[in-house]
Image (cartoon, rainbow, N blue to C red; front, side):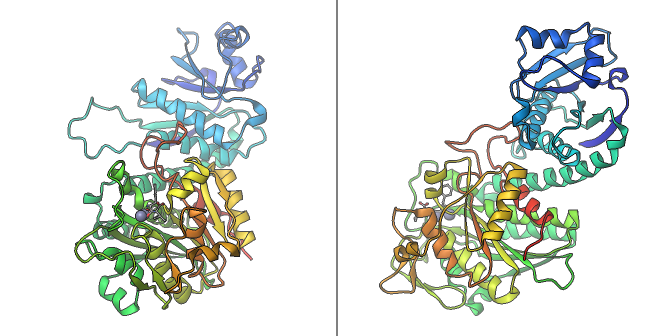
Amino acid sequence: MKVLVKSGRVEEEEFPLLAINLFEGEAEVGGAVKAIDRLLDGAITQLLKSGEFRAKLNQTTTIYTLGRLKTKRILLVGLGKRSEYDLEAVRSVSGKAAQTAKELKLKSYTQLIPEEGKLDVEAVAQAFVEGCGLSLYQFNQYKTEKEEEPTQLEEFILYTTNPELTPKLQRGIAVGEVMVESVSLARDLSNLPSNECTPTILAEKARAVAEANNLTYRVLERKDMEELGMGGILSVSSGSEQPPKLIILEYRGGGEEQPIVLVGKAVTFDSGGISIKPSEKMEEMKYDKSGGAAVIAIMQAVAKLKLPINLVGLIPATENLPGGRAYKPGDIIRIYGGKTVEVISTDAEGRLIMSDALSYAAQHYKPQVMIDIATLTGACIVALGATTIGMMGNNERLKEMMRKAAETTGEKVWELPLWREYDELIKSRVADVKNVGGRPAGAITAAAFLQKFVGAYPWVHLDIAGTAYTQEGSVDKTYIPKGATGVGVRLITQLLRSWGFK
Ligand code: BES
Ligand code: ZN
Ligand code: ZN
């Protein structure tokens, strides 16, 4: 899809579809919309005044212009209340318009950029591109019988009546395009079924991303892990025929600065292992690699945006299966660095592979900060639902930066406390720590476990179990189709775009 900016007198242009946004409860229209309304003998204001079109968020109606304008159809899309207008509303209405254009099988449509208001124009352009591009995402590579020949949207035009805005709009578009491409990559990886995305295949895909974007790529193989003493990932992988991989991607854009390290959980299938999960919905555990998928996609986004930072992505990748060599409840294992863990449940595997990676990151990179992202606990879904990322960490500034980024990207995060008291719940009688703290505060005790391996480095943990894919409790968004959401990619990339820690 090509995205272009055009400017001039929109009422004189010819487009297959022109999408126009209106605020709820405002019957007066201004600027270009007023000119169009006049040419239509007041059809738009009539729709508003009659109450037939209230411009509630995502409400739409189509007006055929019947030769009064060169443009054939106008799509009115409600923006909701002006007082609630934000970038999320923009992404939302943009997704709505794109879906309508798709239903009409159009190859091109045009979006009129609303008059300059309280939002930054560059960010608005980015949000329009994100809403459009992300709403059209589909995962259909395994459909051999295409339902009907789909018409692809080839062109998306952002139209402004103010030509001076063109450079800003273009900058916003460029960022929006990177976001769409990277979120789509994360969705693709996460949506892949486990037979088509083993740790080996995931590593190959990460390598392709690295090669295309000038990232360095390395993998720690099983024998490397054995030499290093990475008992977490080795144990989790031991029940599977598929070898584990610790994928390492590095981006250098920040000179001699200490790197930021991202760690993403990539359990390509989580059966629970010997502590096997119930079979209902077990197919959803192909999404247990979503954190790793996000990290690969963020590395791509950061490289494409040429951000002035040094960034490392660590992706521990493994299956969790109950094979004959599988690790078992009661086992005591050694994480990288030597801490011992009593395994209570083999289904609490994410924290074991993440702690190897976090501990490795702390040792090898002396990072400015560490950020981890993982589909870590069902308990996080119980606590916050499927709309909100659970955030925990040891550094106020970093958490604040994450909240700020979340406000911009609309990926909601909510902090859960990590008070010292929770450490009591994961004390083991026989080892340094145990991998399950019981039912109470399950999302927090998982984070408390991870914290044992981050040392004194500033660190934030994102639990995306509820938000990585659409599930019971998910709330529909126009730009998030069913399946993997790619959550975290825009969030962390936004955080890194505005980087300024210390
Ligand atoms: N991958 C799961 C967490 C999960 C659950 C992700 C639902 C997405 C949706 C994780 O490995 C797991 O199984 N966690 C256990 C931990 C428990 C055994 C302490 C859980 O949440 O039940
Ligand atoms: Zn599990
Ligand atoms: Zn898991």
